[in-house]
Length: 284
Image (cartoon, rainbow, N blue to C red):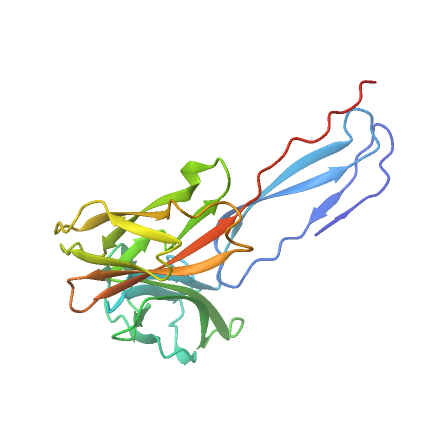
């Protein structure tokens, strides 16, 4: 928000005060723009840039955000360093979170230590965020809080995002087929099926939930490799007007991986009418 002098005399000057709200853990160089509207000819709109350095009372390094990305079944571990800016010893007294998929632990560093790209100092608190073992593919966002002994910052929030991919994954996870007169290219779609642990596998079969509507073809046949290409297409006998509305169907791919024997892919079939040209506009 900004406060300003509403009237500035010709040849004079005025004052504009910009107020920027930061979080308790935000630090470093910050830049903001302030848009100013005036009635001066030739300067109706001005953009002012405000730059400043924020100093956090509690530093969470590299930032108070954690991204946990991997493949289902992986145990993913990330680290944060937490310290008081004033140099006093930091105490993390309590961790508050209720998601059993995330495990958060802390440890005080008794001597300087490098953790990945983080340079820890003596007295810093090393915070470890890990996924619980055996999680299935999923994507979630959340936040946990911890309490400190800093008199001005009793609580600090850290956000996290968890993204676990299936071991065998179809990309895209949904294909779209368009049933429209004269639109032959849209009647088929290609997708790739990946093994996210980079192992070779075979696709042995592809079963359509509505074979009278659509089928699939294994472009690579029964080859054993890390990535397969699959073509999904409408049956040649399905004509425009055969469906009254959208149809959501399923394609099931069978693999030779005993831990991942089937992969389901959504198939959206969308009928569209032929667009007719409108009436010509009268000449003026």
